[in-house]
Length: 334
Image (cartoon, rainbow, N blue to C red; front, side):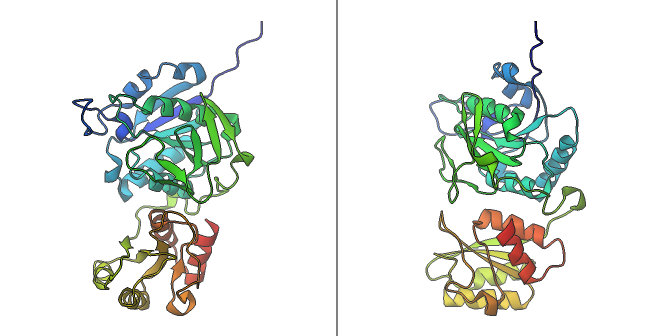
């Protein structure tokens, strides 16, 4: 009798969030995030033992709106260590949904990923009627342990879909189908724990990290400013005075702003602050030299990256001496 195939070893790095949240009253909308530890999450889905040998640790236990640079560095350094472990087949990060698009992208740009790193979470707390955390956890473990996804790098698994960390954004405040790869579409799907990968997760993984996490001790200050009709330059001037090394402008349309705001951005650039034009629009690209003369004004266009991800890429680009042309190349490449 042939021996049963060995199960993959999936390590869960838990960080808190709604998936670990509880409600005092299931009939009320409010809840407290990060109440349950990783052991409780695993115990709630006993079917996990059928598809993987699951271990884990509580790296932190916070709502994801409290994620900051220090938390990113701590998590990414731990994930890099796990990537180097022969005892780990794949890694799952449980995370709050509010900043999952940012943390997963930071990890994708800083952690070497010969093994898959999978982010998941929940839109409903663990004690809610119709909690989505258990099925997301089950699917994410399946993806982390699958040989089909070993070249996918960092992905987000949510609501039966596999998304590249580069392209995914949270697009709904409360529904279980809150995550969308708005300009590209998902790179795969999960059907009751069985991953299906489209074109080998093309475009989701990076061959080498943009900025290896072992070399990062701190991140430069980069602010996001939101454009609106009648916007002045005061917020831009305040960001410069507060020490911003970079500004990501979430412009209207194709990254546009008022004449007053444009003058503020020009002055900021002249003072050495790197200005990246992005868009507040949900989908679409911010193209260079479209309605703004980026060459003349010494701006960078964010290409496919929306403001939340553009900020992270700029933070990492500013870690090394770079010309504006080199930073633009980073945005076009990563």
